[in-house]
Image 1 (cartoon, rainbow, N blue to C red):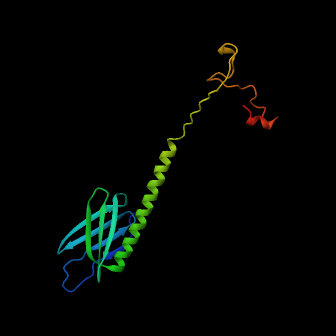
Image 2 (tube, rainbow, N blue to C red):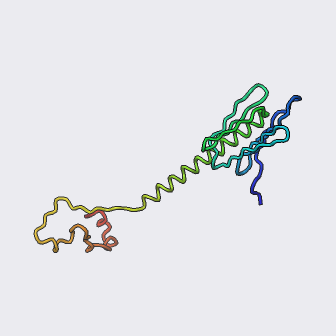
Image 3 (cartoon, rainbow, N blue to C red):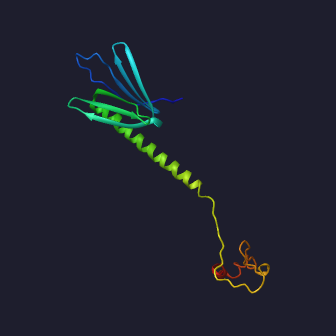
Length: 161
């Protein structure tokens, strides 16, 4: 099963004096940032649902990638190869746009589901009643159904009251 597939990778540019090997991995469901210092490895894991914002800062030789989450956590890895970091940044922006569109679509569907009830109020304005209320067939709450079904015979009845 292809649950986690790597989509893009950005690695830290290796200089002769570098002791670090930081890696940014964008998979099919999450963004992983590995920060290594000698033998200690720290991982910053962000699920697509929690992804807040991804920013890039380009330098002359390297770039820095900063990731923030919806709950306010953030992590930055600097010294990345610029082309690789730009690729990760562009893909993250595409994911963020798709997530925003999905949230908007979900909100529209939820709002549409709340408007399925139709309230009809029949008010007869200026009607004069000559007799008691029980003899008037157009009383509020009752409908005049004497001409229902005659639309097939006379289609002009559709516009009549």
